[in-house]
Length: 83
Image (cartoon, rainbow, N blue to C red; front, side, top):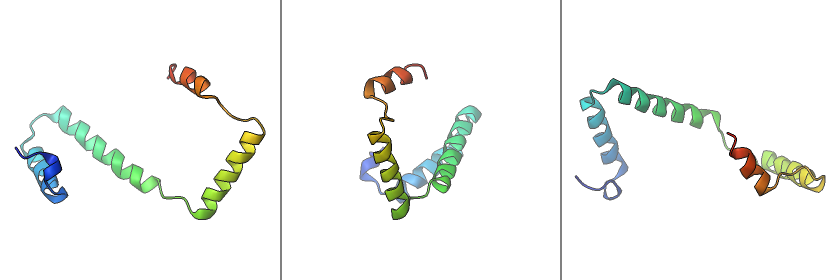
């Protein structure tokens, strides 16, 4: 099999489609299907910010910082251990 990094995207997609056609494992297919659906909804829901939106967010972040509304790296790490 040729390494994926040496193939163009179109060839890789065709290889994946061929593999899906041959796939018999219903559970694995469902996982792949969900992954594709999640990716499609992600790209639709997440549009790039406009320049005005970015400036507004930056100003809000600066104001939060100046007002002491921040979380340290240590606090974030501690919180993430509970997730």
